[in-house]
Image (cartoon, rainbow, N blue to C red; front, side, top):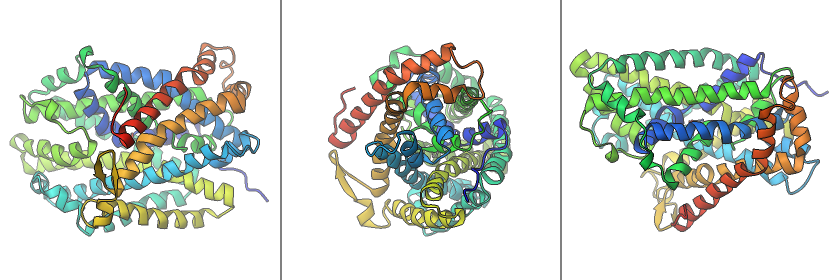
Length: 472
Ligand code: PHE
């Protein structure tokens, strides 16, 4: 007997779970850093345009594929393509990509968790020592933290879609919003906050070049959890009476708001720390920002609120990032679980154990590639420099295959599954969709310029990351 597919209990439940997936380290750290370095308000404007005019249609297409087929990505491609052999490949890519992105994302999340524990143990000062990070990521404690994080995530997943994923999102997302707003209000009342705001918000269009445009696009795509099978899988748990376009809009809006608000937190903090800071010297990477720069900023708060106060604010921030990362990881690990259940008929429990064991091993391989094990640290020679296993996973799956997956989704829904079927699915639970401007836009954009943009990003990444020269 086939058990009926589990569904999210309500539209709100779906929106919170999908927003939980979308809101992650990308929003809280990568976006503010990118915006600051690449034109402030101008970057924000560009990013918002990409979210709503390029990414939102792809999100709707992924959700429609999932809901129509009620399957994981592999099953969705198989079923909607009528069993085509060639279209199996994107299905597998949409399974392997989240699996591997989860692996490197887990490692960063584990570091965030470790830093939170250090702060709670009264060690904020230690974290500001430049050598500490390198030392910390090479301690054995990392494996213990990895086991704890995986236990939490898999514990939630074991409870299922409605009682696990949805209930957790309903509890954690409001907490995340409240904490974020609390921190922002605190930071905005510090000295020099206004300097940071100016830097963040005043648009500098001169900074917008091809590279920035491509960065904004990639950032928006990753932030909305696209190209990783997540929205196909979550779509498969959506009820038919709920509007896909309405829900997707709510998710995109929430995600963009959180990214925007995170900038109101980070930039004023930097200027409080040092009003004459040279922002061009800031690290481009989220990792550099979280682990090397932000602890210093938090420690500087001790002048006004004391060491304990500064530690509380720092702990609040690291906890916030941890919560956001955990809800993202839950969504991404759900993809291989759904595949094992749907495609192999494996029980949920067995799927969880299988995926957890493999991910623990691969995440450990990433964790030791910062000096602990030479073979993983100097894993490959790529585009003129040595890359670790961690770097390789990030380059192959996050930088390269993600836009390729997005491109394949667009081509698939328009040219293989066909527009009418996409329209029919999107019209369910959404009486106004058929004939609307949104429908016309979707039909046109998904078949033309959106795949063209994604193709350009894909080709440029291949040129840059594998051959060392970009053409954009
Ligand atoms: N949207 C997440 C972020 O912005 C990215 C992500 C989603 C990562 C799902 C892992 C899993 O950080």
